[in-house]
Image 1 (cartoon, rainbow, N blue to C red):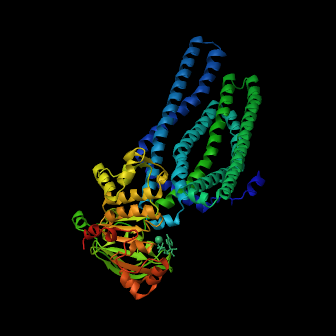
Image 2: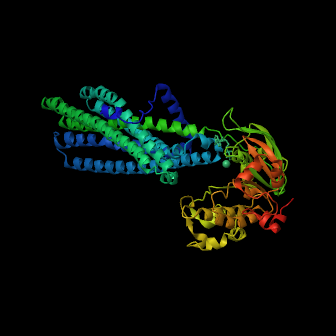
Image 3: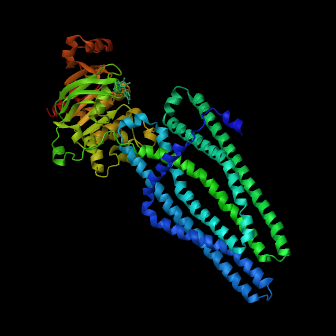
Length: 627
Ligand SMILES: Nc1ncnc2c1ncn2[C@@H]1O[C@H](COP(=O)(O)OP(=O)(O)O)[C@@H](O)[C@H]1O
Ligand SMILES: [Mg+2]
């Protein structure tokens, strides 16, 4: 068994050290408030458990009374036998009823507690800023919400129960045995240290086996979550085999751990079972002798045999709960770690009110903005500029220059280390993030669609946006005809990020979405980069509608996309090195001019735009812009 473990390709699971156990316990206790609304349920469960235990302990005693007083007694008593049988039957009914009610109540309360924890985890993750998602892998978070909460649920549904039910039943059985016959009772208790010793001997292996299985299962879940999300890449780069073999290794490691766990636990259970039967045999031998010597009655012997049998079950069960406690502590610690993570970007207590929001025109300023993802590695350096309401600004520059980072600051996905970004003179920090994201819309190359209908994807499941608005938006960007060609029109269901649509179709939906949501400021981050020229021509019509009448920031790889912008900022290594309109920049003969020369578009003015947007192709739309 040991060999199986050490030959595994994965590192052994982290042991819970003394200190780790303490923090694990604290983490578990920190989850207790989730159970507070169900405090009375847990009291009810306790009462039901006591009732159930009483009936189980009473039963052997009733049989003993029947045997000693009514059957083998000096005056056999058929009537008394009937009464005892009736009481026995009633106690069984009460016991079974209490047990059923307790299970139902426990599941009711326990599952609600877990639902609350899951809900809290999810909403907490939703509040995190982007830096949180940079630091936590998606698979890890999926495991957190799914299997860690499941493990913690076992704490609430199994551990509590076992502690109360089994602990109580051990105590009650001991009391019953001592009551029945002090000497045999004390002798029987001799097996307690033996059971304890065996449990202790097995505890370590049981715990380790259990945790290895859990860790390896969560490795599988993380791997799957990341892999299914990245399946496109896997297939394009022919990584199926390599990924398959990694998965195979994880799977095999889990299988080995599982078999090992079952082996250890089987060995432990059978050892206890053997011990139980040996104990019964010795009671039969010694107790039987006492019956023959008339030292005790036969009924007492019977009751002892029953109690000894009953004794092992709760002890066994409590030892198993040790594992539940251990893994719950580990899971609770992971959950607490996520829950204790404060969102890096918090809303102000006094966000700007609706009167201010309604008057926002879309004037954006950056004043001395410096930003780094990691300390010391500056991505944006001392940026200052002002964008007039309704203007269109193009951002160009080499990959990694910081263009996407710049717009991430404007959506407040990240916060700059220095400087201030304002919207109509108000610092971004004075807006609530929800309001800010209503004001600032972001279109990226990678369109994210959710599982749901086309309609709901365009209005992002917001019931306050009517179907009429969605239809108008789709018509404005030229997506309506395309949507009507889909199998169910606006009710066509999209799956897995809209994989059943083409890139261009997804892009069109995202343009319709932006128009429907109607932000004051629109950011296009390489939004048309991956489209072929035919689709781009289609999309450019949509873009014209989208960019009209609002401040638009366009990041583009293709220079033809930005040549008609009011201003073009050229970024290099986090600095704006040139700014001006297309003609001015070409005349300056700097980086932009070199890029233009490389890309082969004509420098002469008046050349019809190859693609984007209204300002070139449809002057009418451009003229609508507020200036
Ligand atoms: N989430 C991130 N965490 C750490 N570094 C990042 C992150 N996103 C981008 N970067 C780094 O910041 C720099 C600028 O990236 P980016 O703004 O995406 O450039 P561009 O959009 O101009 O291609 C790059 O060096 C990139 O590696
Ligand atoms: Mg980018």
